[in-house]
Image: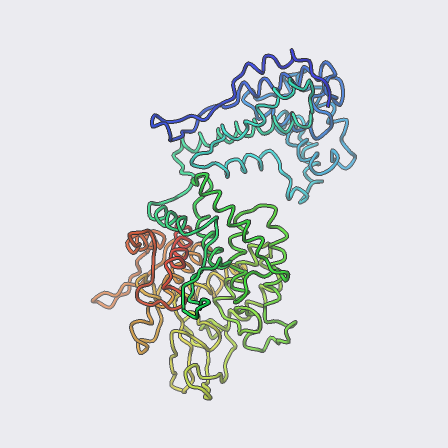
Amino acid sequence: MFRVFPVVLSTFLLAPVTLAQHGSDGGTQHRQTGAIYKREVDGMIAAIRQTARQNVGNPAGPGVLGSDVLSTAKILTAMGYSHRRYHVSDGPIVRPSLDYLMQSRKADGSFGDVDATCWVLAAMDVLNKDGYDEEIRVGRKWLGRRVDGVVTFSVLVRQLLESVGADKFPEHMASDAARLPRKWQATNTMDRNEAATALVKLVACQQANLKLDQMAAKQIPLDTWSATQERAFAWLFSQQKQGVFSVTMPLKNEQGEMVMRSFPDPALTGFGLLAMQSKSIKRRNAKEQQAILAGLNWLVKQQNPDGTFGREVLNYTTCVVVGALARWGDPVTVPVLARAQKAILMFQNAEAGGYERSDRDFGSIGYGGSQRGDLSNTHFSMEALRASGLPENHEAMQKALVFLQRTQNLKSSNDFKGKIPHPNKQGESIEVASGDDGGAAYYPGNSAAGYIVQPDGKAVARSYGSMTYALLKSYTLAGIKGDDPRVQAAVKWIQNNWTLAINPGSDPALGEKVKYQGLYYYYMVLAQALNAAEVETVMVPQQTTGGVLPKKAINWREALRSHLAKTQQGDGTWINGKNGRWMESLPLLCTCYSMIALESCK
């Protein structure tokens, strides 16, 4: 820290700090358009340059704007992107600093460590791209993939855009940087590293605001958010307490009486926060964002020593929590997600657990512990593994494919057959085999939708909607493309059984109620699967009086948005009033399912 002559800063200190603007109602805030922080940027650059020329504040050399390579590169980058658009043609303003950076170039094309090299290349690119073409090319080659995790100027601008909210705009985001010169004057000091960081932040706010102007001019919405979603969000917000959702259950009190007690629950909190995060940060107000962050921080603290979350159905709970934390993107989640990923991998039924490829459950994942694997838990697990950073070609994903194929009624790829315990008759068994309609069952040989008995007496576990969509989603997570026969067969089943009225595929003999089991779960995986597989329209066969079957293109996003809008309750919730199985009697769970589904309908 070095002394700064007060006169250097006097011009800058005359510039007022930009304040938030308010509408005529006195409460609604409106974003300031155009260039923001102009005087602040001009004043800070003037202060940095004058002190450098006077050798005040420890410049790296005569007229060099920073004290080292990194701070110099940051200052030059900010100047190039500022409203003044500084360039190499500005001569003595930037030349000493550019010369200093070039003198720091190493034989391998780097300029020091990764951070310094990234910022130097950014400065060269914006100030004199053509003049430094070769240096930029060699430097980027040296960087390769080392740039992961580096907060470059473009990353900072993106982060600022992501933090825009209903009551928070770029003009609010650099007030701390704008106040620095007053601090310098009061203390007669200057820290060039601090100055570089502050200038970068001010200019990044300028660029973020410019991008918002450009989006507004093109009438590009920041995100799609409907009145249906806002009503659901408002209800969810009313159910949380400091971002945490609770489960209510009957328990005996000290007098032995059954009373209802509520307990914070990681799984419901994970689902609640996953649904609430479907409302982008740009649209959340301060209280909403505060609640979400409080809940996410609570979840982080709930992790068990083995990496799991919860006390029961450990895999299911862990996968849901991973989904919520992965969306947050805060560095605090990195070790948390790594431990959770390891735990989920340990749940997979594979060689480490004594399984062989010939075993029915090989590659599957269940609720946790030694429970049998199923397609529902497996697709949740695959999604959580990918969200925690596992690549699609990892061996765990490839092992999961073995199980996925055995849930699909597709004879060309399903090798499972044989006797299994009868699902409804204790002590009896049935012989099962694969069907060939392309859909999927719960696990090999088992279906909540019933069975189809073939002429040879073998039973086929019926394909049904939610599991077929779970299969399609899982194939996509494992990197299987749309032209693969397994994917095409699943899509064909979806086309032939398209409906939003029920969870399709159940045996009519099981009764009317079975059609509605897992209905809102069905909506969620439907939207996630079709969105992940990049299916824009579902080609649905249409029966006509002449027997011809022309296909009608259904925009599934519009259809699902409309259906959920019509079925939403007056308080903003959804509930499965026709079949409460699998906890769909809880409006909290059905509402989370619906909001997650609507997010994929953008």
